[in-house]
Amino acid sequence: MNREGKRGRRWKDVPLGRKVLLAVGSIMLLMLGINIILYSQVNKTIRRMDTVYSSNVDLTELSDSLSAVQESLYAYLSVKTSDSLENYYRSEQTYRNLLEKLGSQISSNPTMLLERNIRRMSESYLALAEEAVSAKRGRNVEKYKELYDNSQKLYSYINTYIDELNSQQFRNNSASYQTLREALEYLEVSSLVLMTVMMGIGILMLFGITKGMIEPLTNLAETVNLVGQGNFNVKMPQTDSLDEVGIVTRAFNTMVESLEEYILRTTRSMEKEQQMMERELLMKNHLKEAQLKYLQSQINPHFLFNSLNAGAQLAMLEDAEKTCIFVEKMADFFRYNVKKGLEDASLEEELAAVENYIYILNVRFAGEIHFTRQADEGIMDCRVPSMILQPLVENAVNHGIRNIDWEGRIHLEIVGKEDRIFIRIRDNGKGMSQERIQEVLSGHAGDGEEQSDSTGVGMNNVISRLELYYNQKNLVEIYSEGENKGTEVILKLPKTGGQK
Image (cartoon, rainbow, N blue to C red; front, side, top):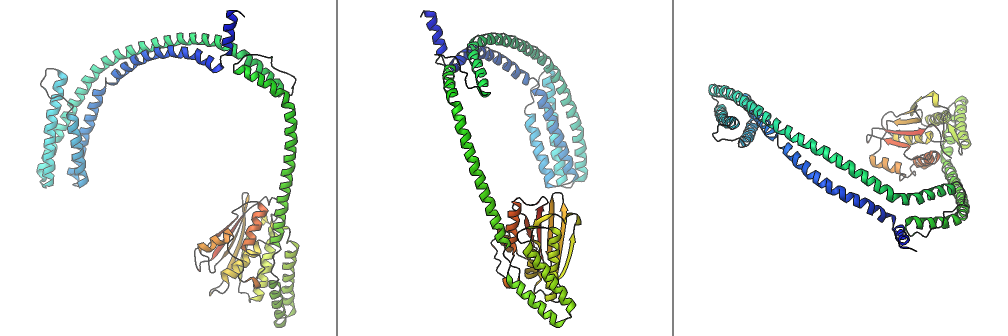
């Protein structure tokens, strides 16, 4: 192999990163040197331009400070307060500090002469202002008014001199600024020309260097596209290059050989994983269904026995018609309970069960329970878990209005808003503490109280069944302002029904 072939082989074996680094690095170094020279010149010119109008800025600040002194002096003389006096002394000190920047030497220069006059008049003005403040503090009204009038005249003269000085310096600075601006524009044009030339040279160099790298990458991209379309019979031409393109080409050919087998193994693995996920989901659904059936089966038989005993006593004391109505209500209540125990129900059916339950209790307790309802008729067909309203009303009776010294009332309200159903059950009974509310909502409150005289379906049961049915949390809220101030239970249920 001749010398030129060896030299070409050595360049082909250089890594891509080093090739790009060598090409770009040489261009960047040259551009860096040019930019440093241009930057230093531009920065120097900009700094000189920044200082051109600094004198005008100082004079504007001096005028603003003088106005602040005059305003704070007027404020103190008008309303004698410690705050206004403090503001005056603060603005006076600021103005004195700014005066130190003005020249005080005698000179024929108009600018220096104006600065000296401003300083002398300012000292006289501050002396008059100080005397006016002293007269005000001494309550010498005539004197401080006279001194204030004199200081105001002097204030006007000083402002006039400051404006004149500002105008003079602005005219001088404008001429300097124009000269510097022309120099800056010349530097901008020069830098643009140099940068354009360097970019042209750099593009040509990069094009020549990267052409040898792009062609094999283009071939590789075309081959990869064919493989992506399902053609596993194509391969890249063999190469002995030691750079990244050569390494990727050899690795790609090896990958294509085993890709089809790998896809088959992956497909079989995904099918097995999908089957396992389906079995796991089926087991979870069965578990949820078992939990739901278990929770819905908890009905205390003592409630049935006590209610039937009350019916027997009623038959002894009243005529057969009322006894018949009572027994029918009892039969409807327990027929609904048994029939719907493992199913969902409409809101209309749930509401009917509540009314039967209230009727039974009023027979037993001589009409002491005052129950009212308000329902949106348009949502009565919506499906909800069965036996969720009656346990909440029962809870309001047993733990809310039972054994209170005033007339107990329970109000049930059902309304639909957008995609939600809001069910509110309010009583005017004993109320609940915040600690007790948190225990009930978290499921830590026991349902053991008064189990012998209830249906046995407590708050924990209702909350658990709602969460299982809708597959959501935080569907129940409880509010109470404290002892003897009643309780409100709110259900926020989706209109779409539960997810089974």
